[in-house]
Image (cartoon, rainbow, N blue to C red):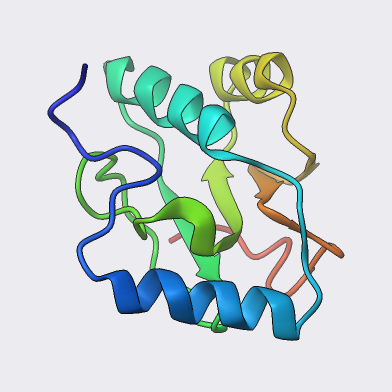
Length: 127
């Protein structure tokens, strides 16, 4: 059992409830789940060099780019509409193996947490 926060970590139950309300209001359909998210973050945490990522949560907020995979993810990951990750062969292989719904553009891979797919900012390189 990891002592690090995992996909279902909740610091404020209100955030989780508000996310669920927005998901229902927008009629979003889940494309990922805690099992998939946990596999992704557990594996990436083992990488010697962590890839940069950014996220968009269901309330519309898009984070800046960073590579801290331990505490800065938007927990609970139930609220993640998509995550963009710096593309590498190891990330591509991992994402395919887990079975995420994803697309690649340039040097970025986008994993969707929900459908319909949101393409906002897709193709913007990380900085």
